[in-house]
Image 1 (cartoon, rainbow, N blue to C red):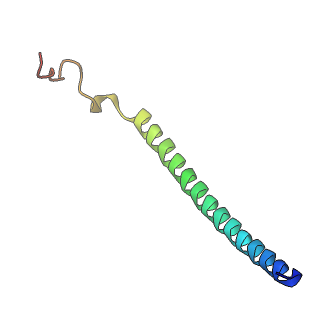
Image 2 (cartoon, rainbow, N blue to C red):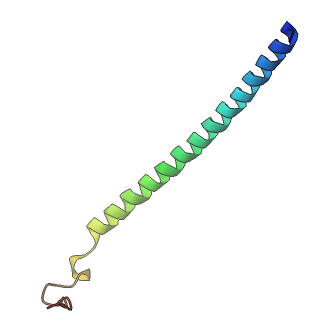
Image 3 (cartoon, rainbow, N blue to C red):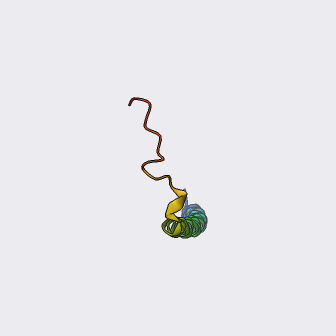
Length: 69
């Protein structure tokens, strides 16, 4: 294997690695965006639960006892 062939192989490997790095960076960006959207949804759900009126829940007197009682 001569020097030109070795250089060509190294150049191909570098190009392949650069492509892989770009692909992984894009994937990480997409995942971060999805995680941020999920975090915002969770925050909204927590806020809605905290704001829920207590009368939406049954009182202790209205609760049906479990079947084992």
